[in-house]
Amino acid sequence: MERTWWKESVIYQIYPRSFYDSNGDGNGDLAGATAKLDYLKDLGIDIIWLSPIFKSPNHDNGYDISDYRAIMDEFGTMEDFGRLLSEAHARGIKIMLDLVANHTSDEHPWFIESRKSRDNAYRDYYIWHDGKNGGPPNNWESFFGGPTWEYDDKTGQYYMHLFVKQQPDLNWENPDVRHEIYDMMKWWFDKGVDGFRMDTVNMYSKAPGFPDGEPIPGTPYGDKSPHMHNGPRIHEFLKEMNREVLSKYDIVTVGEAPETSVEDAILYTGFDQGELNMVFTFEHMWTDYQNATQWCDLKFDLVKLKNALSSWQTGLHEKGWNSLYWNNHDQPRVVSRFGDDGEYREVSAKMLAACLHMMQGTPYIYQGEELGMTNVAFSGIDDYDDVATVNAYREYTENRGVSHGDMMRYIHQTSRDNARTPMQWDNTENAGFTTGKPWLKVNPNYPVINAKAQVNDPDSVFGFYKKLIRLRKEHPVIVYGDYELLLPDHPAIFAYLRKLGGETLLTVCSFQKECVEFSVPDILPLEKAKLLLSNYDSPDITRTFTLQPYEARVYLFA
Image 1 (cartoon, rainbow, N blue to C red):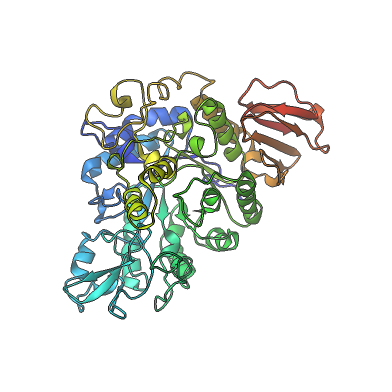
Image 2: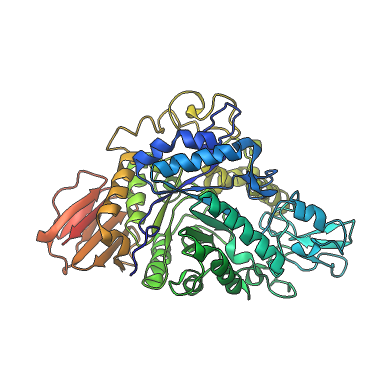
């Protein structure tokens, strides 16, 4: 397999609004990110992924862009970005921006022009359509609730918005739109940016005619998914993007691609396909969903989780490349989701880290994950900012018969704001995030869980992540080795082998509070075992040994 820098890198996601506030206005900013570069250098990461920093009215926290070539006012100036870029590069850290090109803000100049008249030069930059039977063009529901279409009085047509109504979808069928996007991408690459994370990349191509979806029981809507994911022209569009832009720069790309199968991913990321380097799969993120919704009490199923991750490990091997993640700005905190955020918070946070980082693919760390930050349980819905959470609360309590108490419990488990509470830097007021009033409340556990308490402690969660990253750079088998799942049906143990050349890596992780026995496969010679990593003081290896609660062990056989 060809060795490349982005396969060997570890990527750290910064959600700028919540990372570090340099000026006391309560919002994190670019100068704040620059101020914390030495922290990230110490951690050992190679690439920073910045969630959207472009100018935006913030109806969806920056994922509604009004100017692709300007910086969001709250985050600073283009000079601040230039300083962050140069200071990161000086430390050997690359910068990857978040590109949102399925839709813009309704305050983008293109859309302002587009809605002026049916014959405006920018009309076809967006998806406009006549209504049907006195209502929207079809029965699709937006991701954040309500119809996917918004009626415009002035021109008597509807425009499509897969997300909130302030996020109109661009019309990728229009070559002028595509080339506007490509020119903008070149502009950023020429500034020295090192890559793009591409939001909702597999939604650019919609089904012709926008057919109704299959009815969703209990709602007035139909299932839009088959008609707007992995559409008929998506690979044509991405090959064109690669040909005209991506192939001309030494950069990294990852596409957010929900509802994507392994077979789809080979088309997106295949080494001979000429599209993207990686995509984000969601299959493992849905192992605690019930009836296709996150708003529930269902606990994750480890067997399903293992099978989901393993199918991507084996399916993409030598064909494409995996992205590895537990957390991001859209997911609850992994230690609260798949671990134990109480008595075993530290050991389960370390276990989850080892389990993920020893797989094949490029690992992503979301800010605070390296500290074992947890979910938060705000007391009322008014404490939440996330539009998806607030809209879901209203929909489920007003229209679906869910009680306030039940819905708040679901929100405490799955809201996106679990990931968006401010970064916990120290035990001073507001966790050292800001001297002002934070835009979102700080998790009250910050006096115990914070960076200052961990950075100089090799036994901390932070110290464990440093070891993980260092091991990845020392052992090619961690990056490039093939993968074999062990005990696929075991309800508590996630164990697998990695093999490269004459080396074999054994990773064994317990996902439960109770002790459990594990037997080393007979093909592995115990006398050649070297313990690379553990979250306990593990004794010497024996053919059968007992795993402590949430224990992780990684052995190298060479």
